[in-house]
Length: 82
Image (cartoon, rainbow, N blue to C red; front, side):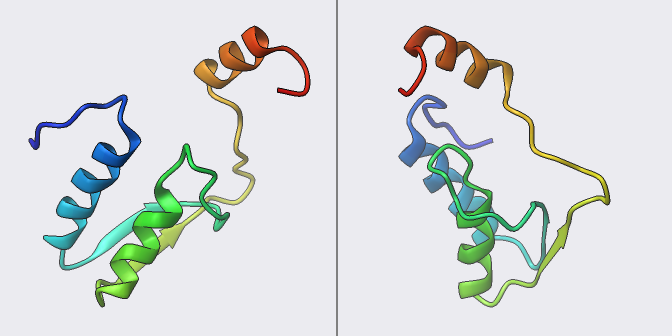
């Protein structure tokens, strides 16, 4: 385990990069979308590929992204259009 502040996105990405750097291969459950700033999967796939680490991407047939409970709570507190 690497210590990091889970509320600090930069800290999360740094730890993810350290873990990916030590891999011989990576597996990503990813729909291929660009990073939205909250989900680091696109960044991690690009990071691994840029370092020559093979990445196997899986996205099950019929799978769909759904907003998390946290995202739903945030949108409810911010109101429409925010």
